[in-house]
Image (cartoon, rainbow, N blue to C red):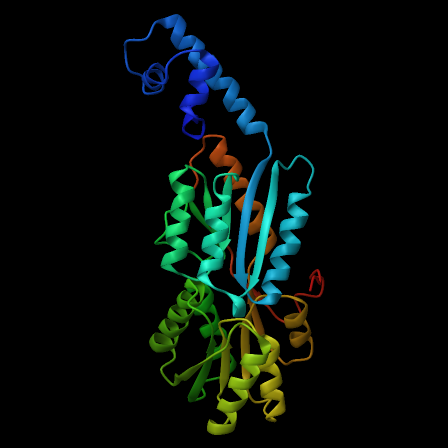
Length: 340
């Protein structure tokens, strides 16, 4: 007997087998009191429904709240992966810029789509309203995959993405090595309460405090994952405090940070590290306006998210998937596919 019966309606099995739901329930839970002929009939119907369920197209809702560059990168890879031959997943996507985000928007999308879809992939900041909405998918025994940034307080089935704490620790190591034992301060640029940014911050601070005590974090400035906001806040900080030894941008808006450094005349004096390799950050590497970009394999993570959903419907147990933290310089991303 195939054991993935929890994704199939007991009422549907009973209707096709022409027995009562209580009888079906007895068979599915291996309880006695059902004739062998009736049991075999129920199991035959279950296997037929399982085959039909596993081979049919799965409609997956994707909700992504992020900066525009990451939204575009994710959209590209989702569309490309969903069009692959023999792929049995269709995507109903919602991409929302972080600066326009309202938890009520995601809540409405999630609650309005849970009955008619087969699963959810979500990129979102931590929010109790969203986590409660995700519970609806879980109650319906449908998989929820958190992508890039986790929602561990929800009942999601799995997280797919890199180890964000390790990414932050990597940034600390790179920025410290670049300063060659200099003593001074670092500026951090942050945005929304994303779990990934919180973990990057913790990893970054842990390494600085334990291994590089001569370097301290002066303070953090906050953007909305936009270049306009990061430019304004970083330029104001440099104007009021002078240039830091380095800037670590945990969020989006790398272009704005680079422009602020350049416009204040300190381009060759500030080590600048940020996240997400895309057309903008690659250009900043090429022109030496960024020192390093820390990335991850978005293509692999999208493919793995699809794979985990298929595994779920094939009755396999699914677990978190951690991709590698990647380091880019101007010399090792020459063949990078320029998407946006």
